[in-house]
Length: 108
Image (cartoon, rainbow, N blue to C red; front, side, top):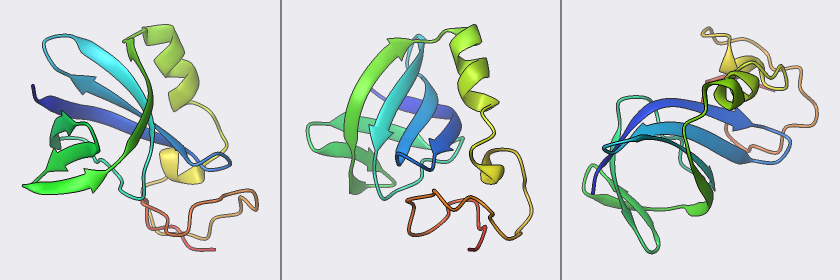
């Protein structure tokens, strides 16, 4: 079964990432990983993570739920991470961020 990533949002204070994926139905997956799953990625879920571009990427999936537009709107519009809405490389002012490397290219 393949998943196509539609959108991804990171919660920097917890390190939890939320992605909307398509696999016959639209889902929201909650996971933690050192890898950012960008929109357009094609994944194959396996026991120890996902396979993307023929590489096994370790990933801990916490929850998978059917897509809910209102819930995704709340996740997408949280203001905790400037990278979720800013597309330029700027300084990140979130002192609570636990991410070692910003997947959005922001710097501390």
